[in-house]
Amino acid sequence: MPGQDQVVRFTGGPDDRPIAWAAVGAGPPLVVGGWWCGHLELDWQNPLFRRFAGLLGDRFTLVRYDRPGVGLSDAGPLVTSLAGEVAVLSAVVDAVGEKVSLFGGSSGGCAAMAYAAAHPDRVERLVLYGSYARGAGIATAEARDALLAVVERHWGVGSRVLADLFLPTATPAERDEFVRFQRASLTAEEAARSLAAVYAFDVRDQLGAIEVPTLVLHRREDRAIPFALGRDVAARIPGAGFVPLDGTDHLPWRGDVDGLVHAVRDFLGAGRPVRSAGLPHDELSERELDVLRLVAEGLSDNEIARRLGISVHTAHRHVSNIRGKLGVSSRAAAAAHAATAGLL
Image (spheres, rainbow, N blue to C red):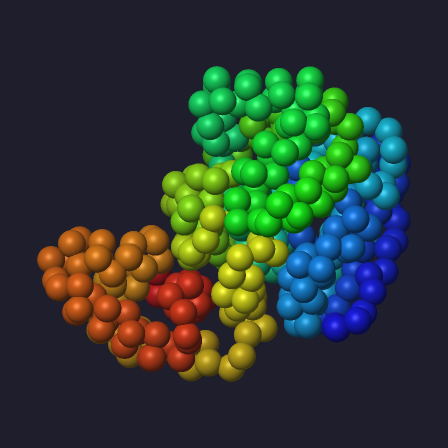
């Protein structure tokens, strides 16, 4: 979809408040959940975001939306409750008019998980990135209170603290741009309320009811949402695959975007043709299956060697053989293929 522009539409949401949603690309619909801070137009002006959207829009119809109170949607009170977020997502899926796959990123993952648990008939597959099940586990109570206070009382400083948290590898100019984006998207009061909602969400009781195929991706050194919380989400969803990714940036359109998108495409069935789509269980040895499960848990070759009591060289050789049999070029893609084929 290079050069293609997004098409913005409106649909009625909770209390008949207009919801702005945008579609771009071609193929099966992939709905991307709302972040704590977002804006359809301002995001689209970010070249890194547009590249990320383009990589997905090349295989899918990528659907995004602004919650009421944010961006191009109704300018009334900001929607911050989990029930309200799910109602907004439901309205967008209804507007799309067909079964969709969901990409729930960060706090948007909570609404995606809750919706998938309640409406399995409307969801084809579920992808979760940088997600969590209980917001209170993101940081200590003292750290959460301190961040909320600085965001509400000193939004200029708070927006810079958040930029450092979300974009640790960014240049000074990129951080400055993200600061401007946050302050253009939300007032200090709205930012504090939205961030408080992030910490308040708790979907642990709903995860066991998710029936749709699910893939959980999380960057190992994510500074915004700890890696352990992503692994916890995968453990709570029946049959979910877990793909650890290298990197520190929380936003998926930064860092190793290609590796992330490749794993998503493979799981959703729009990747390049590979043998793993019909991989028989007996093509991998029992030891290779053991190694693959540990790769999917996020373990390095050194950690796999210690866990299985083998040499690092042997662990590395097993991982290389697994990638060769699956026909993939990365550990993340191997884990995604294994989740799709039901090998985990």
